[in-house]
Image (spheres, one colour):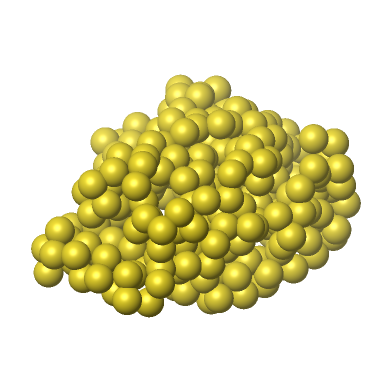
Length: 324
């Protein structure tokens, strides 16, 4: 079905079910801003623009992507928590939002109290990437090298508590390695330094490195999901490569301020899921190395609670705690 026709159906349904903003106008009647906590060019930015373009076409309203990087996405989350709860300021959050409650004891917001889960968006694995000349060519080789040179092999991340950081720390714990963390402020500089041989190892979000893997600027070793990734089927999983039970995927999803009217969040969830089901959206996401991750607000809420519990346990086992 053409999305313009779909929009008409949705609008009729919204009017029929009372899914209108408190002003009485059918949502949205002005631009919608999607705040991301990461730099342009990263996974959140790519996903926000792919989905936002389709949402904007259906709404006849622009969707503005607003990067506010810093503090593992917490600056963006804090901004959205303080926004007017009318559905016009949303957060596209990632894994770090479920890590932060344990990692940062002085957060100014409470995830469960101050934000409402609207809809999950995408899921994807990380991929261990290295410079083409890096001596380890598989997971067993990386483990052997790291154990032979304890606390000498460096790994990059986009910041403390971000998904790439936690995925690598989980690997360190389960593989018995002692790679040392070097936090950056965003994936573009990380990728520049890994491709340039400045830093050896990075557990990259697949969407941010697909082109560099295809061009040979980076070499992939393994993916972090339970099963192999469609975008890079030649790469084994970490679990099948000598670390059984390992899994750490990256995801993104939409949040709104907690007081946002339920009919607005439900409308958003319907439209986001409809976009995720479009063949051209699926194709564009697949080309970026990610898969749609549709779900209702209730399903996403349960997922967030489970992720928060999982990563809280990891943070406590590692003894990590930071001041924001």
